[in-house]
Length: 197
Length: 247
Image (tube, rainbow over all chains, first blue to last red; front, side, top):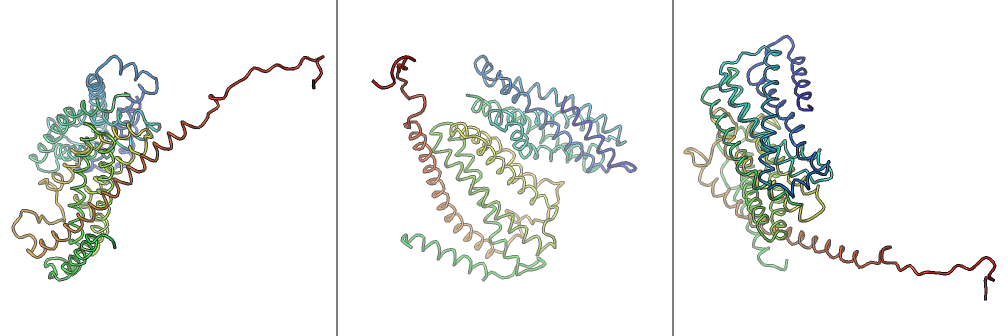
């Protein structure tokens, strides 16, 4: 809910800022990814922070293996992020009147990017979940951790908006996919290390 | 100066500094004389990378066994990496001003190094958030290991992407890079810097372990102090209203 509201507000703000002129592809890709990044860091760590706030974290620790908890939370976050990205991108394209030159590249890079963002924020949420200032800490820790993914995402989406070399765009998309695979592979082990009481 | 090795290090650093002024001015730069900043800028960047990866290694060891010793090593390594990264940024900003005309260029290598510094800042934010040493060690170690991939990407991959254009010249492993005397000077300064940094790192590890010991002793002392729960409540008989106060 908060991610959706944040995303819509951000896109409307971008629309106000770009009133009367068409955004260049690189700038549009940057704005789209910044909105996605902040909606992810605001909303996704909540799935773990809420467990600690409601006191259900200890129940999960007793009944489920840490790896299973990580996969459950990360897949839920991935689904939530894909839906948010879908709604956000459609709204963004309608309001800014941008043309998509390579729709497949856009779709694949958003899917890979959303998975990588979800795995990264789940891990950062677990790191911050038991801290006294957990909400602020999860955002502060997630942003630098996820910015390299955003750089790759901007490279890919910029090309799909018609700016830059197609090979470079696919390279960015592949980089994002590798990033997602690496985060999903290493995430459960790191999560298991910090999930213990 | 009690230790002769310290004197030797001081002399070596003085020698490396003199060597940096004996190198000829670098051609192709706007201010060839001031291009000597790279004799200190590059070794600091190399040292940042070395301490960053040693810190991640120490973090992996702290997750495996002997948590508090390796955690102290990881924290000290990250502190050294942060110090070196700040020195790299400051010398880079100075270089940018004198050679390229602006304090901050929109350069991918500068930006990626700033992001590395932010990741280091996040590591220390996690450490500051937890009071319990075990949890602090575990969570900061997990972040350090997790941020290995972003750090590798930011240092080695991102500035070399074909679609990225940078002001920084590619000088490693490429023909037409630095003059051999430049490399010799850079390596000499790097060696001196690493010896000094390794000494500072060891002192930092000792200080962290002593701080932890002090905290443990404080906790033990607190547990020995008599608390309100330890007080003995004895039954007393209050005098009856008609009973004389002093018998």
